[in-house]
Image (tube, rainbow, N blue to C red; front, side, top):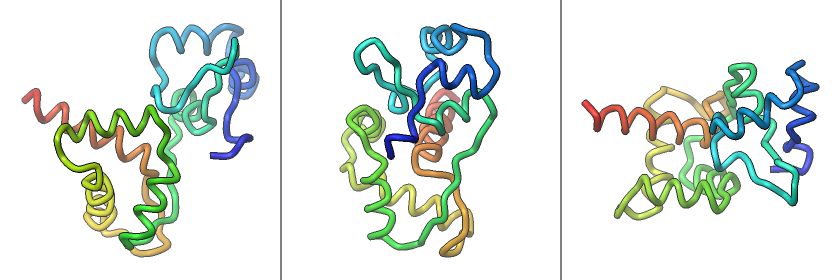
Length: 138
């Protein structure tokens, strides 16, 4: 994640022509994924991809490779302490490496070839987690 890939609530409101205070309201309403936001002093920082997801139904896609080392390196580059904790909680007692296998299975299961686009790991994880939780409820 690069410095210019994060935005403030005021920047988001300007970007999406939202009324002043909209983003702070949505932060209180938990519309943002916790691994995609953080507070720095008095300022909220939100990943641009998360702002796009919340306010324009953006689907984050990347070019992928069906390669264990690529998947591992890519996922590691996406991890932050909050996301890592969410993944560990989701995996329960399974080894953390299981998440790499699951994402690679997702790529292969979608019939994606090297260099084709697939949803980003973060997007995949939250969708996968949500579908697993729905399955458990049934």
